[in-house]
Amino acid sequence: MTSFNLNSLKDSENYILADSYKVISKILHHSDHKPLHLFLDEDIEFPENLESFFPSKSRVDFSEIPGAKYHKGIIGVFEKNQNQELKIIPPFVILNGVTSPENVGAIVRTISGLGFKTLIFDNKSVSPYLRRCIRVSMGNFVFLNIYKCDDLKKLINNSPYPIYATANDPSAISLNNWNPEKQSGFIIGSEGHGMDEEIKGLCDLTVKIPIKMEVQHLNAGHSCAIIASRYLFDITD
Image 1 (cartoon, rainbow, N blue to C red):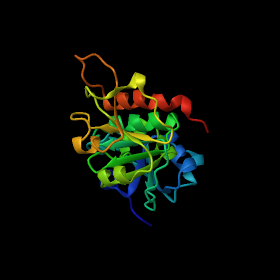
Image 2: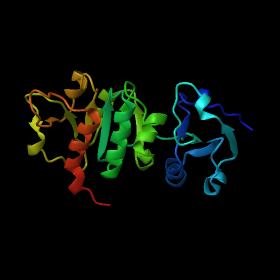
Image 3: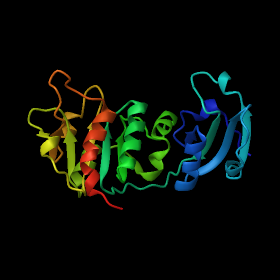
């Protein structure tokens, strides 16, 4: 049987680590990621309704693992499904250089709640499968089609759907005057530098949030929530 070590797993791209009962349950019941191992702190009882899903289990003293906080006392390890082909289902969001796990996790939770279907991230962005992102998103990544894209320029050029840039540019259209097509998507750029200029120039339109000039920029996660809310009343199941 495979032996699992948390220190070696936490940065692996092949595994998903979920550290709460609620998140583990959500992944089990709403995704096809394969459950592999369940870690529990020494003082935590094995939940019977989770235990049967995992082929192996072990005890661990989370306080002795350096550089990580496992505040729930439980970690579920899943083998990530790697057989996903890029298929854009609108509405969608694209991340261009978003590096904060907190922002990415918040974006995942927001857009999944508002009914978005797809999240695409480039090779400069943090993966939504990072343990911290999963914790912040409360496991709601399971309701999105998530893909990593190594060539955003090609994706935008070949997209059958409108793709909107977001930037606080003087020439951008105000959010107040923007009615996005349901079958479309938008891009959220880096927290520090915004979108890549080359990527922005390929988009159908640039949209800005009307904020005080002195503030200049909002947090990436908050910006995404405000922009995504423009789609809210157009989405039905």
